Length: 241
Image (tube, rainbow, N blue to C red):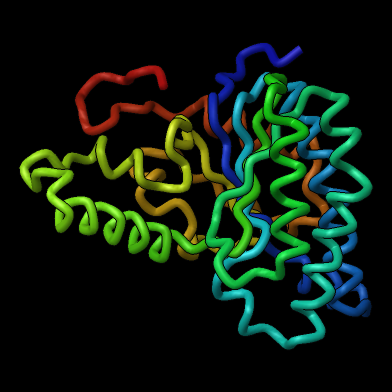
């Protein structure tokens, strides 16, 4: 079905352009966010069909709290609605849900919903859907550094034993493979505090279409671009992920 495509083990997506999609149609930003949820549903199905093991989506960044309060509240309600309406179907489809990001200070009922979704789907293995919520990579690295410093201060860790591999185990993404492919929709070409450490050797593909227009065909186009890349990981010869 996907002849000639190299399928990344882990694909990450910055879902950008909901507001601009809505503005181009004379609609409120909320309409763009609703359409973005539909695009997410089809993308999760496509990722499973392509045989991707991990799909990480940037759903809400630590910087998004600075948006107008009404928009933030709407985004949070969309997340709640997605969990209520979609988790059962995702579970039945064999999708495992993981949530990364800082849960400190979040409303308790929302944290409970996230934890329940993770617990319900914990044993699934068709696709790992990793939701980056209240996530910022600099903040994640700061939390990891703090944890390591506390272990050193307590005499539990020798500073000489601090390695990149040790830092990996203190990140939100511990025990997950690094992303092979990072896609950003909406025409912007930056990664906006998303998986900075983990994306050291990821292939970046920037898509001009806004997120609500993203579908299996555009996903396949990104995979085709990824398949054309030579991944050398700092060496001279191409390596497989």
